[in-house]
Image (cartoon, rainbow, N blue to C red):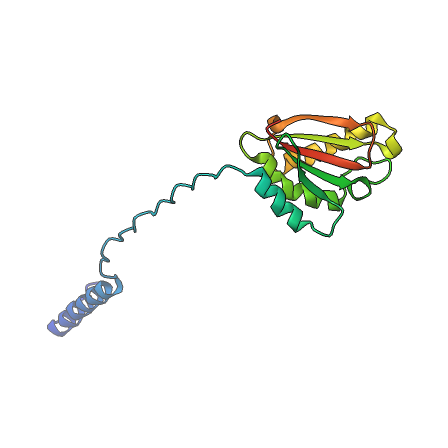
Length: 174
């Protein structure tokens, strides 16, 4: 079979090819200018941390806990002493930190984290008995503070209180 092409068919074919190439050219998007990235902003350097003033912190916390049985006071040696009654700190026979003590520890953690600070925790057993329970309670309060970011190296120790009805936390240059 042989197909003969006349002049009219040739023109239509040529127009079809031309139209197809024009349409194909329209389908492509014009080249966009290169995307310029904005310069990356650098975060400003953190401001230097002001040295902690324990007396100012003691006054702030005492004001914050005014009307509660929690005591915040400065010792003659310049340490901040925090005292929380045992009934708000632990259940009888247990060494798990109760929510009221946890709240106090949340507030004293930044002071204990400060560079150069040391902390010491002491807690009594029940009714003056139970040296092992007392030591576990003090360790539990210390572990809670460590969980809040206080380096374990900031603790000068935990102690079983031989008497008393409160847990005591000392923070300072011990």
